[in-house]
Image 1 (cartoon, helix red, strand yellow):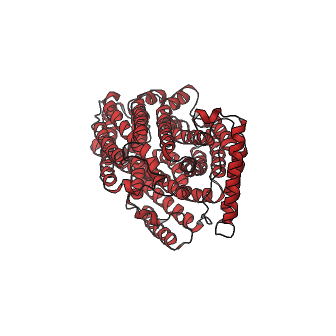
Image 2 (cartoon, rainbow, N blue to C red):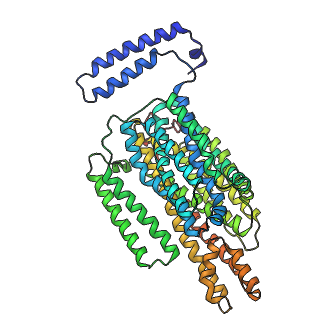
Image 3 (cartoon, rainbow, N blue to C red):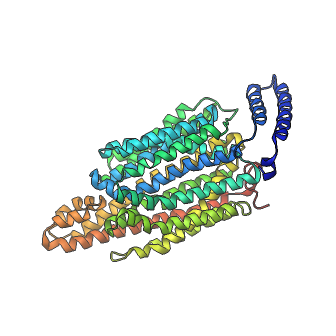
Length: 564
């Protein structure tokens, strides 16, 4: 809306309203007897009523952007805030490494499992309605997390929080896509990308301040006022949108996908506690494979699948899924273990760790803002693929930590990785929905967000399992032939669980110094190992995105106008 539009008087608004009403009446008459007539008639009636109402306040589409950005802000804020609070949660609730993995993965699992179904429900019953319900559920889950008195209840509360998060994630990009067209859509996606940058930038410091200054519980309570603001804006200002072709939710697909993902993540985390050859681990991984095959069959044969596998025929859509998975499974999964290193090995407080990770989040924020402007002129491929290359270089710079390294070793890698994240996230948001018509944006955004969360859940589980085994192997090797050799497994569990100092203090004086050296070197070696894995994943994603993301796949109303 231009300034001249806003300054017109009541006569102009009345004339526009009458004109819109006449157009709507013609549309109402022309739709009688056609398939979808009821939906078209309702849309025409809503358009006429909207045109007859005097204009007050800002254009509704900008209120839609405000509500979505608030919702996404708390979702991303919650992830980064939780990372810096893990050490305090571990200490107060007596949690192990696998317990901490479940604090993050319980949220990611329920979010990933429900995203596609939530997207289908949003297309059917209304995206605004599902967004509001999801925000309220997320707020209730946040309250439960803050009130948790044991680690198991916290994990359950995080899973419930993920249910609300699924409804918010699945509708966020779809609401933007349905509200914005043309150049304004590029501006909206730029704002969306900047919001992700702000959340990532603010999260570590805010989480550190709240955790160190008050309690880790306030990292969840801080969500309450933001949720209430998002709900108020959505209820009063956001226009409802649907998919007129939406059918019934795909419950068979939901059940098979949810069980497959749960079995996969449980098996991966269990492998970190035991061995890859453990019977329960093998059973879970086999069950996950079978259930995923069932899910694919259900999607191929279902009348209204929640994942239209036909979308995979567009290389750009597939490339976007690879990018969504890879950015989460690499840097965002590794971040959990980097934070544990800074707090448990280097000894910094939550606020101290948060300040140091500003190098990552600050660079991400700046790069996202620049990428938001470039999306109007540069094809998505030339931001996403180079972004993963930059991310891979950043992770290579993070690698090479030594037992006597200080936190400053991380600075170059965090800065470069942050730039890579910012380059990826903003164009990825538009790629998620830009290759499908607007009325399919709910499913498309839900699938893309699902792959993000699957990346987090599986990335943390796989990296954590490899990390735990590397630490255990290093400690067994380092303590061989010493009086503490028979306690190596218990010591390894304590080191990965953040109890290094307590174990060292309780050890006999004669082996205390050697135990400290072995524990630190084992932890650092394991961290370097999983950093290399994350780096390889980033470089592989760069190649895939370069080969698959094509500008011609973007539909006219959804694709960024770059690369004519």
